[in-house]
Image 1 (cartoon, rainbow, N blue to C red):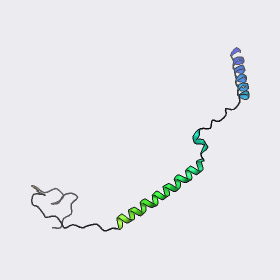
Image 2: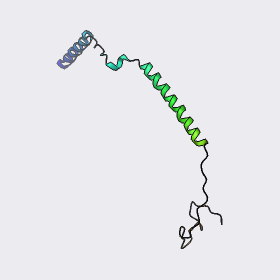
Image 3: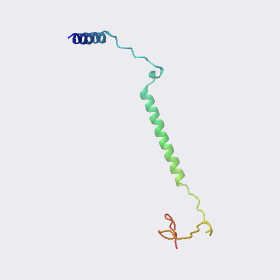
Image 4: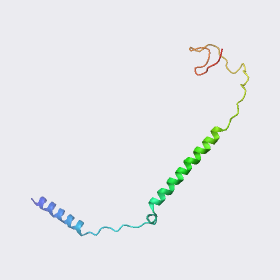
Length: 98
């Protein structure tokens, strides 16, 4: 019985303290003075400009030709095979014309 009365008293004390406490004033930090929507819009524009720039540079680099070199000489010491592989005379990922 005494514990119930103590709990009830504590509840009413907490409720009255909560009701009388003034809401804490929100502190204005230096960064909160800036407009967040403006910053978001600015970085969105920068991102889109970067995407367009990178896409144009990639298209330019891929559209340029690249040099084709002659086949290197078939040196006899490069592919020495003492016995054949189980899958055939070439390596597993090699395709040669016999």
